Amino acid sequence: MNDRSAADRVLDALGDPQRRAIVRALRTGPTPVGALAEQLPIGRPAVSKHLKVLEGAGLVSHRSVGTRNLYALAPDALVPLQRWLVDTWDASLDAFAEHVRTHRPQEEPDGA
Image (cartoon, rainbow, N blue to C red):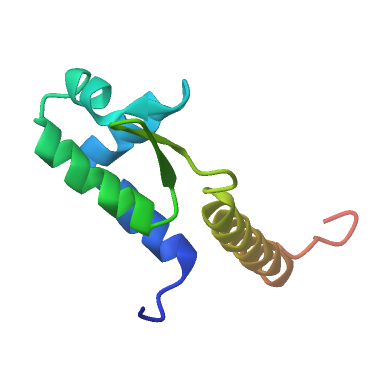
């Protein structure tokens, strides 16, 4: 495995619109590949490939029930992305606050 962060893997996986559609579809609960393919404009083999990418990023998990593979959103799958967003947002807010502190307009003396 390479040294990319979990957030990078999640962002990369969600960069594809079909994968985002799969994640949206899985919000309702575990779903077999065939049912996912019926909801998308791509075939079952393509859905399976996208699911492998999503699983590799830790976004989905699967379990076999008989001959069917059920896919579901992985618990806490988006936590690394949430942490990254919070850290990024906090750094941006800190930089903005510093900019405001250092670029305050000078107050004019009374009676000017």
